[in-house]
Image 1 (tube, rainbow, N blue to C red):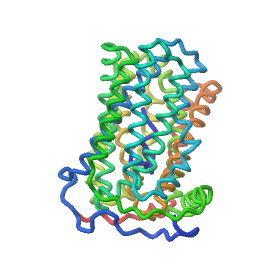
Image 2 (image 1 turned 30 degrees about the horizontal axis):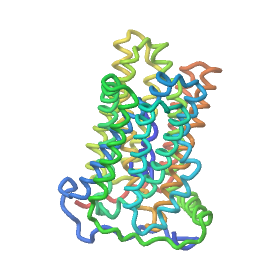
Image 3 (image 1 turned 60 degrees about the horizontal axis):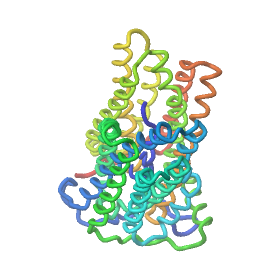
Length: 445
């Protein structure tokens, strides 16, 4: 598995996803147009939103390579500074993730906030090549930029989740989420190669200008959306009271609790696995770095396949059944990796197949998780529920990575893979012992 983060429902991504203290959790009426529109591919507003997602995902892949290269190669960052640079991007989830969800539910219009977040991110990213030109760039500067962009990302994702319902009809949300996952998968396949080419041609700091432009393009595309925003803002009761409502909703609703529990389980053991995978592939299987990168591309191919079929499958069988089946595929990747040995060609072939399976599973799970979260959460609580899930599911990645690294030191690499395979399988219990075990009604077309 090359990525665990897409299991969040935030839009994606992972990007998985306030009235009275005891809100009704029955499905709410669709906020988008009452009359079902035509195919999504013909809807201008959805195409704009999807295009915005595609350009930012591609820009993110470029900065994922260019920022650490700038720090390590050009600025001579120490291991501790590299750790702080990595943490600066995800730290905002822990600092303001829950507050961002409460803010999203308070707003009547989400689109201006999304545009502002993209614009601030573009300006922040553009300061890196500017500082390099004048000789002022430093590792603390990179850390500050990473924190600003990470903060904007947390706020953007919090407001984007409830915003989706103003653009996409209720019956087409699963298909829309699959489209977003397709954009993520394409960026995963093409982004690293493009990033490497740009770094070679114009150096790492100037490659980040492309990421800045991608943020500006996303802001322009989102600003061009015409769908009216008719979100009814939640009453203000105080930030912490509203945050507690979001936490209580996830904890008290059997379906949302099961989704969150499964996501936490998958990401914890997936992060433990990923902490050791590169070392294992390089040292135990003798794979070259380029082959390890190619396996990432195969994960993206699997994501594309998953996004291509998940909407059709959920239309026929319903989101619950596809979610329950996809969660059973997660241990496959761990088991194949733990069993792999022999010639390099065979190891690469097995890991490529494993990555494709993992990509299909991650995307199918993420799409269904997002659709079910939208379906089960009242409109006035969507921002907080999504932020609560992201806070827990993203936050556990750090704990899983630390646990994987320490376990690898004590037990060895293969035992940790077997433990992770057994652990990630328990995510199925969250799903199969919850209301999600009952088939949801297939969507009407």
